[in-house]
Image 1 (cartoon, rainbow, N blue to C red):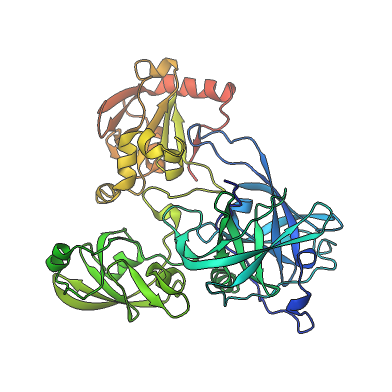
Image 2: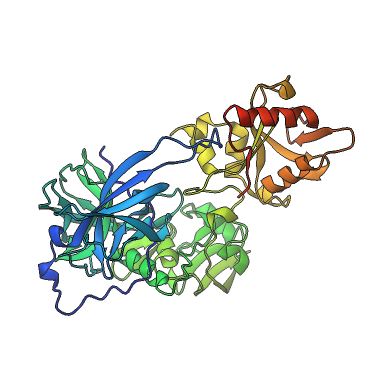
Amino acid sequence: MTSFSSKWLLTALISLTLPAFVSAQNASPEKSIVRVNATLQSYNFLRPWEKGAPTPRRGLGAVLEGNRVLVTAEMVVNSTFVELEHPSSGDRVPARIVGLDYEANLAVLEPQNENSTVFDGLEPLQFDNSVTAGETLQVWQIEDNGDGVTTDVDVLRVNVGRYFIPGSVFLLYEVKGSLQARVNSFTLPVVKDGKLCGMLLSYSSKEQTSSVLPAPIIESFLADLEDGNYEGFPNLGISIAQMLDDTFREFTGLDADDGGVFVRNVAKDSSADKGGLKKGDVILAINDQPIDARGNYEDPNYGKLSFSHLVRGGAKSGDTIKVDIIREKEPKTIEFELIRKHPADFLIDPYMFDRGPKYVIFGGLIFQELTLPYLESWGEEWVNRAPFKLVHANANPEEWEEEGREKLVFLSNVLKTPSTLGYEGLNSAIITKVNGESIRNITDLAAALDDVPEGGIHTIEFVDYPKVIYVDDRASQFVNQQLIQYGIGQLKRLE
């Protein structure tokens, strides 16, 4: 498998209307794309005070109006340096990110030097959002000598699927065609009749199939950025079950010919939660679009699509949505505002880029807030390899949220020091209280450890084994100074 992944990008404050004298027919790889060079450095979630080694990434970006460049968010994820390079002359200029959305896997770049020659002779691209199944598109690449390479791909279908972030799905074009490997082929523009219709997300050399992030999502992203206050794509905040079983349908009050999907869970403080949608409801229609028993609706442009596209493709944050439901076998209609729940607002962050994990080290005890990237540090099979208690908590956050927790703080590991003797084998233990104070987040824990109890002994309580441990403050403070002296430069990160 050759990957051309591109992480979710949110882009900039731009109007994408081309000057009248620029025609789509004149667009070509050499004239409308630039090379993008990035240096990436991710955080280490198992050793939260460290960062990984810097790694280079090289891709292509589509030139937009105003000397801006569109790439995928994955192209610049955790970037410490980004530069733009003219495809022919090789002129380079450092760039800044002016729009970014990891869920939509989109980003917009601009040169730090307005007088740069990187855009000399280049022409911005217009958009085409009219792609349908059966059409032929072109994937653009650049040779090392600056010559353009165009590869035809056929659109197999239009559906809804994952871009980059787990659980975050958007509209996708699935295309087929044999792509040529190039050094700078991480992010690739896809065009139709000289107009940008998408960005390549992935490529399977075995199947010769690719996923393309389509222009309608890109244009929605750019439109949101225009006022300088990017809100992001809304999320409904529910998990659903299909209703294909006749007994299940009868139990919920559905007739044999009715469609609808069953609401299994509603995320706290999500659009659905604030709007009054409840676990056990059956969604029959959204904005008068009937939902079938598999969770699809009939889109006028693409045919059957997941109903999620009605939220993440057909609406924006702040819009009001109408939902027809069955509740306790009675029909009901509710209306509510769509919002975007940001990753930091979840009990367990679903992703963390461009920011490090929050942690506190005290005398060799390492405390963290649980995040999905921490669990993913156990590899592709993290569901089976990561600590079971933490995996279970990630899958069932409701019970912890009902306790009033904002984050799930746990003892991730123990460094062997004089103040942790006897505790060296402890790890993955979820904390309830420190010195009698309930712990809702890592800031609460840091404050509790700063408040030295009478006698100088801290009491740390856990949900499960070992239930409680006792830590001497004076010995721990001495160890803290040694840890700083011998390589751990920062004992806490709370922001």
